[in-house]
Length: 366
Image (spheres, helix red, strand yellow):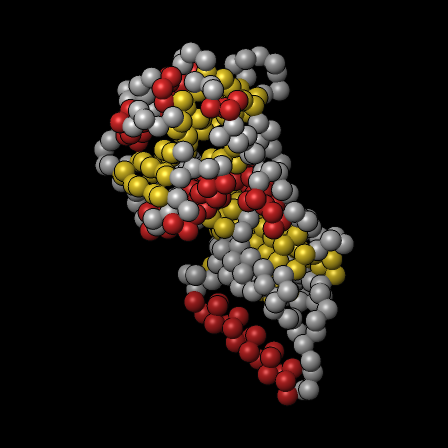
């Protein structure tokens, strides 16, 4: 089975997060979001993917590569000054021999769609995945940006110039069916990005993508968590993260790789992007933190603030921060060794009884 996926470099309010990469490469729990998309496609039997879009400012193809690590074949069609939907339609119409084609968008992913190889799916002219609203009205439905199209029945799609026109053409296909889902992972806005992290963290995707997170608590084997830190699942702590003494993490917290959470910091309902330093005693609730930028989602609206180091800062823009962290670890290790103290193997105080920690986790020092 073949897929055609649109990669957008356009920003809504997600440009506030990690301006060095497009929305599809934002960190989602334990890996970039686009990796979740690739794994979802591979799991559902897709063998080749055509990635389409305008000429990207960031090299998405460098991250994706040939597709071999997912057992797929990737081709790239990034054309400047050409609508990606025109490219999508042309590629679809050029391969009429494909029985089914998956159409999608790299910044969204429907939670737990059915097996696309199932006969109940393959017999439809077009199957559109979306989320139903609170009312029972037919118009109260939001498309996820993903569909499975029977190439022999759907007809030409080459004249669509926008996502709206593509949806109109798909829904006008005779036999087109809308399939409702409880949720869609979405990185285009800050609130949807924040919510999607916790949907994945809680295992709400119904796929192998979250198999390692079934207990709701995951700590990388390369993370260091002080024994006096307090963890309340569900949480995910990435590789090369240091959680210092007395910190409180959780519930509903994602900490990306290469972060430092200082002594006494309190994090709840918060996503911390890679390379972020959270200073001593800082309290964050319902926030998205991207290095020195804090976006608070508390209340009806949300606000953005630029924090000064050492409250919240960047370990990428300030190399001395990472050097200081490494020096602190070295000093603690030397002190432990020459004082004839053995590093404590006791884990932090944890509210959730079913904590899973990988066997070779970094030991923490008193």
